[in-house]
Image (cartoon, rainbow, N blue to C red):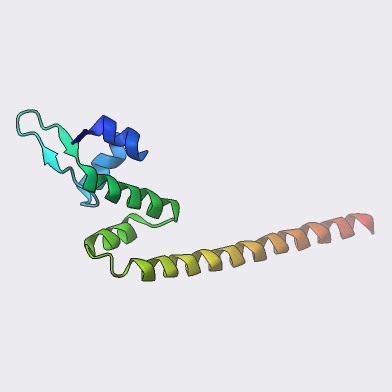
Length: 115
């Protein structure tokens, strides 16, 4: 069992994030000491925390992460990852288009100055 501070260091999740994730039922402590309310995490929690860190790095929202964690078999995880990848690809296309529009706008301003 790991204390919150140890678990935080191991996973890279802040104590506040762990508290919030417990509130929204993303990842809950494996044990809460009834005498002092200290929270403890176990090895199973560690692997779930690493998954959450990875999902967060992929841009998953809290609600999307909750849907992943609610499916204990992780049967739909691959589908969700493919959907997220497509969303990111579309965002990249939109951003590329915006940069091209900015370049065109900047170029039109330079043409006006040179005339």
